[in-house]
Length: 254
Image 1 (cartoon, rainbow, N blue to C red):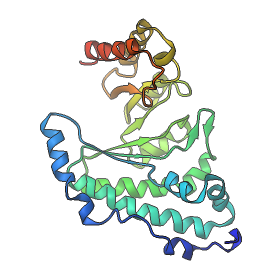
Image 2 (image 1 turned 30 degrees about the vertical axis):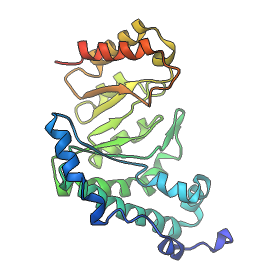
Image 3 (image 1 turned 60 degrees about the vertical axis):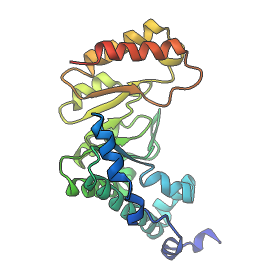
Image 4 (image 1 turned 90 degrees about the vertical axis):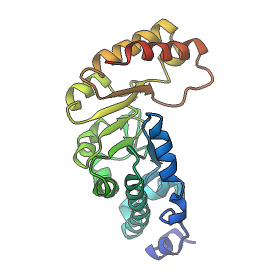
């Protein structure tokens, strides 16, 4: 197909997963209750919520170009994905998940992948619809938003649309302490321990020191679930993993 010929009808004709179908949720209630019966938090992850699904289908380059020169197509694609995510978020909230986790990687470690203005035009209102769907179903459900990279420029927007928890707060490109001071009254944080620095390259004592520092600063007054900002890679020494677990166990409770 010639790119100039792609239209909104191509979006409507494309088969998407039936994530709104009842059968997909038949076991979710039981799984949530089982997790909660052990005193644990039941999280429902909806990673790659809108933007990443769209660019996986379209390619990032073409989708960003669509935002400029094929806007009817971009609107149709994002809206169709968003509608499915609204249903999914509502169902998870109704079934009792403690946290509904959303996320799209919209930044690099040097800043946003697009301008903040473009993010607000194309992604913020759709993310707001998904958050609103969850909270309409159960107002006390918590909503987490995940994006790697430096998302400092959109933190206020995330708070405005109802996000409660920011993940992962990469210390290589964001200052967790400064962000806590500025937004800690309105936002909690999940992460803050970088997997590019201390975990792979520090000593166990370095890991322990960083855990203590995060708890004393970002954890001050609550609002921190301390965790690595990404999966712990094979290169991370086992001694550092043990140091992490032991330090959290020793210092991670009030």
